[in-house]
Length: 180
Length: 102
Picture (cartoon, helix red, strand yellow):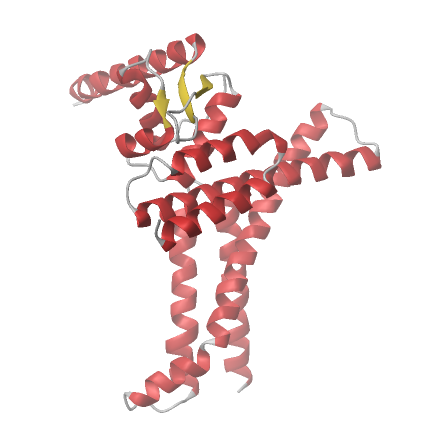
């Protein structure tokens, strides 16, 4: 047995340990199905997909359980109002996810700014405010806008979160430029 | 029954509809639909949770682990057939509508 299949099996066994009782049977199904997959690398990719699916399911269940416990602690009962709140809660979570995604990309771009500046210097472009703007900020904003447009129909709330963060970043840049 | 019918879910329903009485395995479904395991299993879980699919363990051959298999429940078959019919009707109806509008 090759290294990819061994790794695949270990991954799924680890995921099985974390799996909640509700999806334990599914995790076992994925692990046993691994033995019927031809090829080492397809087996590893299969295991990676399955592990992601198990953890996603676990997160959803933990989230729901946490919500129920908080609801119990606060004495909230299941009513029509709560259903409406759930819908509002989902939208809020979507917007916050969008903000999180945009901030993660922004922070990533911020940490990569020196690498990008070095790469530009290697091709003869000196480090300046404009090179920084065009090579780091502009692509980041473009990526965010494209992501927001693509997500608009399916995940409007996430899209709004991304656009809001994008606008805040753009205003920050405009204010910084104006103050200089 | 409220179920989000994404294109991926429709692929799975169609795969089951081809031979509705047969049990199917996860890997075979992945190959026939082209869906990756990370997409396939959450959808199978959701379909089983809504009682559209039933699951069972096949006793394995000696030296091989038992295999999890899936097939439609009667409700699932009814739901998938109804859905396929409405999709077919929508596809057939579209050109007629265009002609009527044009």
